[in-house]
Image 1 (tube, rainbow over the protein chains, first blue to last red):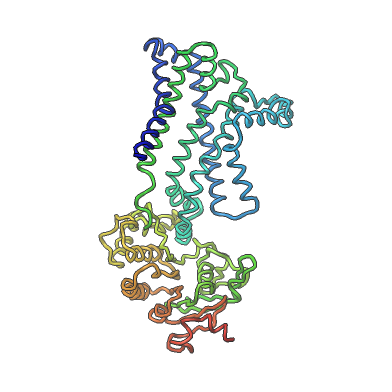
Image 2: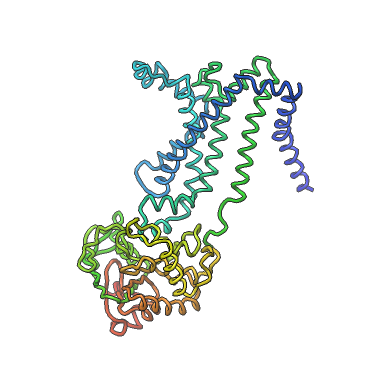
Length: 267
Length: 241
């Protein structure tokens, strides 16, 4: 009885809190018909926002992969002074509110900040443009790759790496032939989570982007703008795109989990 | 073709793990490093392999100073306690690894590598298991693959770190003999790290008994003074002294 009650409660909760909102997004977006939906989605400003969002993700992801692997490697394989501090710094985006993070960036890299002020003398502007959006997105998403790759590195491979070295592999060969295949699923998982977060981030980006129409509007910012301008169809149509990206991420995550951790691991 | 270990010292932090270890190994000789855990035998093996470097002392192979030579340049084959097979590679790919990563100049052709791999598979008596993954093999089979992988690079010295400890007693005894046979067939000097007295006595030409970072005895099994009595607990040697 209790069991049924709990299951029922869980189903009810998932239905109302997760499924219903997602369905309602699509429902509202198509409420005025397919034509209206298409007009809203193909609006130049919305198309621009999609492009900016994807460009940002494409710049941020490789940065996160390279530095994430390097950091995970250092943290998993070496003991060094400041190791714990480094881990805390890398995880700080989880703890800090994105808006606060955005304000910090603005304070330091803005035209009146210590770094931004100096650069302003050379006509270099970091905030209120793509650079600012990329910087803050990279900050927000930096824990994901490290968090996914580090545990895999901790539990696997140390002996395999040594074996590769005694067999004559160079450091690079060891990384490419032994380490990379071992961490590949963790890495894929981290990249997917980073991508989802980079594309969906609102708070931090809204602070540093300055929300300049047609210039620094990412998809989440564009959705808010449309909604505040009483363009509900436009807002929800754009929201379906973001939801679509999120669902795609979830699907990829499921694929990774399904094919994931190799069954031929050591017994 | 002799291998000379001279006055090796190694510490981890404040702990002295090796306190001046010297050892000579003759060509083709099978030497066992016997001692309880914590005696420094695995550290010594890692130093010989080039995975660790000593604070003091030297390693000479055939007169060549290899103390600071990186592991990959020593051409010492190593068999790990966990076997350390590459789990994402087939048995064939595992065995071929050391040949595949050679410099372009000295690397054998694809055909030569394939020939060498099947020759080794034949030698370890697993000729039909080349396309299996390590997880699909029994413990004894994995151990033999690890052996073949180490032998593939024509090692100048074969190093084995407790290679039988993860196997059940029956497999252990039969594998012991085949390892000895392989080593003699290839004619390579070998160093075996073990805490199992019976294993050391049945395999080795000479046994180095280690305790607390020193070699307390190094001789042929039949000449070991404490043979059958105190060797099983070398720790007591020091306690009595």
